[in-house]
Image 1 (cartoon, one colour):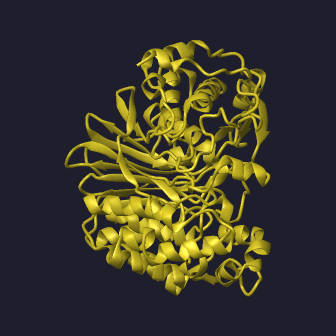
Image 2 (tube, helix red, strand yellow):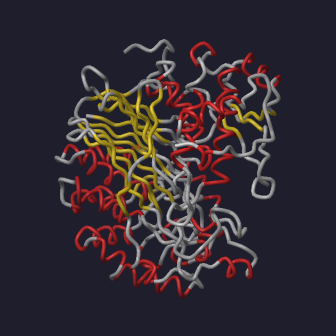
Length: 542
């Protein structure tokens, strides 16, 4: 399994007993520690998930949402859990319009946190260790503290004014009102207590018991809309993943209300072109992917929302015949701006991590509290940093993603699992809002079309096509602004500019995301991992 692309920024990590790739080395170690104690990939995933909420507080945690994809070797099936919470019952469109819209921070930006119930659903079906053992690494990080990385220190500096103004964030995220510098310890013992309560008492303590009451009390004190009743009425649920066949591989994604269909639509279109002949990271191959992305995003804008409220034509959107029609719309010589949605009805800040065990089980999870540090509020003495997921709603009445009480917002999170002939091949993903499906397209094609190793795939030069900020009012237009890392060759840069892409450069390693990937060797079953060098992530194995 030799790559033709030479060495990556780091080597791919290899092991045979278990592996975790995540956005922070301490979280990856938490997952591996759990497997070394006798846990499987699901136990390790929950341990990693809990630890990430401690050491990467800007990205995820128990106050947020998530999607979980699981490949279970014994059945050869991929299963999905939707752990995204709805808008509170008091969160009406009219309420927000009267108050100037949805705020980016504060208690009125908070939706129902769904992640904890998703973890517990996965553990109930597939976990082998007791929850006390699974949460133990995260509890240790909460109570003993962990060294603040340079990246986290920079994020804390940016939020210091807000954090120092509130007593609950001040005591955790500042040094008596001053920014916490890199290398000093950050502890959140109250969150450790919350983990202990969940481990001992299960979901009810979070959604109906002591923790729910504490969140309700905090919400009321901070003029929020989230109530104990909203929490009590919530349930995460098992879901059927969506998938397409790409060059003989089955690529699995989360169904709506996830935007995972975009990646599958992109792959369906790209499959109709000779990507290897176009070349890896050439102007031609990047242009093709960007134009395919525009078509898929136009469909999302017109059709996709919570499927319990909106009839999403997902079968048509993923059909091969529809992809052929969409591919005909691509001009390989010119970047387009006018991109209306197709007609599929006629056809049949976030974190990502992956775990794998020696039995061949794979887990890929995306979890988020929305933008950096979510609402910016810690719910009293619970230690829980609450999300600001409400900011993803539209307030236009005729928009499919228009806010309604009890409706789940449209999410960008989309974990990926790839199989071939029923056997595991890849688990991968990245945070990054609308960038996720674009980065995942690059990751999947880097490996399946161009033979890169996981570390090469996550380290390769990265592009991002920017959406038009006015897309909600000008639905057929999109931006031709294309961000490129400067490591793309001059030929690629010049070729893309000639095709009409307006290039913006973000430095050698300034591209978005924190991509994670685990590959299963097709013959030996060895685990091969790569973790994005753009962030604090590492692949850890044993």
